[in-house]
Length: 254
Ligand SMILES: [Zn+2]
Image (cartoon, rainbow, N blue to C red):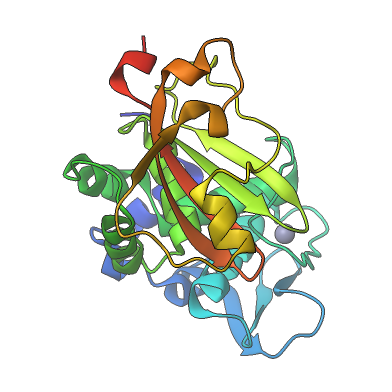
């Protein structure tokens, strides 16, 4: 197992040994940051700190898993960046495609590790035979995390041969492949009308209960990809966006 991250060290230092014990307000308090929930117009959360103490405000109008991630993000700023000028007013926390050294990305990574810490998450994921929306929802519920954050973390563990793709009407596509999926599984740049995800996004189709098989060329673009089938299962992750879990077949992993 890899070295614990900064967020995991905070949790371990507090003796947190199950997902239900991850109380972010208590963690903030232990780090001398006070948390307030209030309606906010223009952003998800803010932090104001003076070196020793901080006040974190979180938008009370946001949904619960969003508030939790935003709070984790601000705790990340406080823990990692407290000697800098702290003024985070992100409109969109958790969607950064920035480099690893960017403070916003670091705060997002910290939040993800705080809410879904490896040392508690990996043992849960190790027991799952495969990724289904139903078990994704169970795990997300246990950790009080969004399905999006949970499925991204699942991809990163390398337990399953999956690629997680987010397609949004307004902001396009990004994807996180599991480290066990070879790089030649190159995604297309746009959502193909043949895919189920397209029907979910543009034709208001209902979610499928189980992953279904589809020709790999609906999703990928590489020489010979029409000789493979992948499994596709999608869910709506926002008003204009869907997340798809693609499972790569065994013989495509060599
Ligand atoms: Zn921030």
